[in-house]
Image 1 (cartoon, rainbow, N blue to C red):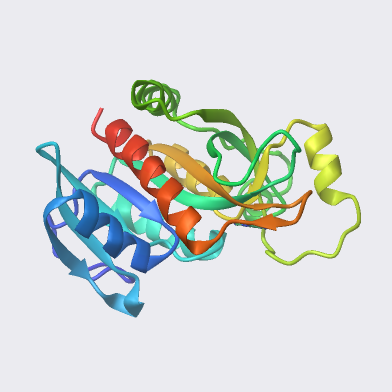
Image 2: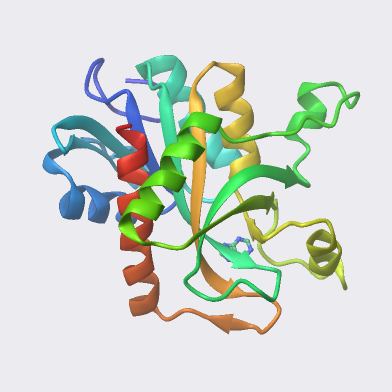
Length: 235
Ligand code: ADE
């Protein structure tokens, strides 16, 4: 096992879906995978491996925020040989033309995290971006399933609760579609260790109109997003 994942060598597939919520990982495994078995319960951050359309796929909870997501991303790639990771999560939309339950694929992620400043000694503003082939596969899968999916940049925030007047407006001025909390770290670590990564999100909060999706609504769009992610991860 690695420091934070209790799997034996070979128990994790090369292709992984990564929801923040470990109970979502369980739900995805039970709903979409065949023959899924749990390989890790360390810290209740569950991980499962099964098959999707005959291809081995794992689902691993990442926790919330970049410190937690970094740990799982790093160990999946470096300790278990994972080469393809798709985060499936939720986000808050910051532009008016994006509604609750919309699906967004993150082409890149700005961030207020200090991780990459530390990584590059404050000399470079590294631009974390999605793997293009994976993104293209997700776009194709969404089109084939008739699921509208926006592609654009997101903001990976360190804090969920911020009190900074006009901050989201300023991000939106620069084309940022939504706020979440993991993608900058996922894309950076995947790039560093030559793995492919993508984030797909459903909008759970509209931060301009202050609308919030109900649990039922979130579940339904979450299913569509997971189907797109599974199609892409086995492509
Ligand atoms: N995920 C869902 N809603 C969010 C928000 N408002 N901020 C950051 N991450 C989110």
